[in-house]
Amino acid sequence: MPTLHLAVDRDVDEPIHRQVREGLRRAILEGRLRPGQRLPSTRSLALDLGISRLPVLSAYEQLLHEGYLVGRTGSGTFVSDAVPDELLRPAPTNAHAATVVRNRAGRDRPVSIGWNYPMVPFQVGLPALDLFPHAAWKKLVLRQLKAETAEQLSYTDPAGLEALRTSIAEHIRSARAVRCEASQVLIVPGSQAALRLTAAVLLEPRDRVAIEEPGYFGAHRALRAGGVELVPVPVDEEGLNVAALRRRGPRIRAVYVTPSHQYPLGVTMSASRRFALLEWAAQQKAWILEDDYDSEFRYISRPVASLQGMDARDRVIYIGTFSKALCPGVRLGYMVVPPELEDRFHQARLAFGFFTPTLYQRALAEFLNGGHFGRHLRRMRNAYMDRRDALLRGLTRHCGSLLTIHNADAGLHVTVLLRDGMDDQDFVARLRRRGLAAVSLSTSYLGPARQQGLLLGFGCATPLRLLDSTRVLGELLRE
Image 1 (cartoon, rainbow, N blue to C red):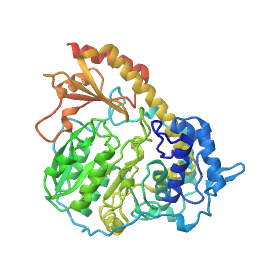
Image 2: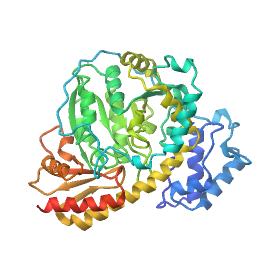
Image 3: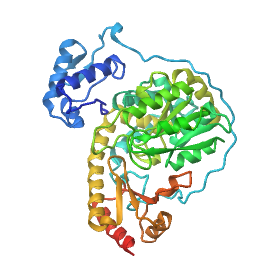
Image 4: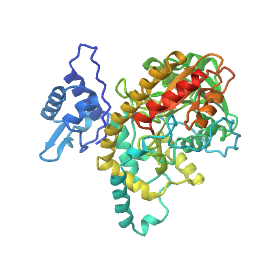
């Protein structure tokens, strides 16, 4: 069962049980929880929300009494099939014009990072592959392989397997507060494929696209390959600076953002910035490309809702991936497009032809539906918190004032800033010679003003290896 996204605030006067009850009621009325959908157990939901079980029990009991929920002995608690239709509020849809175009290939800006991802301490981009649920995944893949029919070996829907799109829509509606139907979901190999597809559908060559500064180098490459002009917009402690975005002029056609966990600085976009960005997009008739690449893992606060879920005007293209939550090797990502753009994206998807094998799609659908994914996420959150804490202890013990920890609230890497005069790309090369990995912060910038720092991944190394590696890091910093 996926984690439910419910906002619980201990600093307000409203009792916790009422916040949980109203959050569940809103999720049902807005369609994020569907008739017949199973809810997590009260114990699991209490654990996910970081509260005691009693308020959750009280909320469930009240909603059962009001008819929003039904209990089935031996099976659990489900959303009622009898919620009156007039109470349900489907999300409004707006029609937007878009043109499918053939974009010219652009040239990538070279950065000092390769495509080799060794499983060594500080490697960025790799989850805990040593904790991958091999037994469960192997069982599901073999089951699908044995049951494979001749029809399943043929060509399939270019948007992806319907069963997987339905499972993903249900998961992100409840866990990420995304407003969508299965028909809006497209299966893609990953976030960069989603960006290339978006550029082909929504953008013309030489269109101007705003991008976070610093930002994700993979997005730089994917969008430049579409022939667009990238316009850097600074990021501060509240995320993308929307006032600076407005000063870039009226000809911005789209903006790429990572609002839940900004890459690489790690900040979370504030609510006021989110509303301002949505208002800007509506006024400019521009598109927001939201990359929600590792929103499942937060250590200081509850996961924040998606930007797409706040958008009432259908200006957001939502992009997600299973590369961090499961593993990169399955090559399964997804995107959610506004209803009026479904046909255009399907046609472009067919033209590109980079389809994901249906065997893994069928296995992942069963992995989601069978509750394996929810259990895996809960296990991984605890494991990653242990690894992050080990890294932070090691940095404090062995590096001290030699570097500054910028952000460690979420995700699978910690961003640190180096002292003035240090070259982060040179330092990464020195780390590599000692058998360690890292990403230099300066490679995430488009403009000339660049902070010198390191992205230290902790996902693919054990706590003991991370502690030992920080000792080596400290030695290199003191040299």
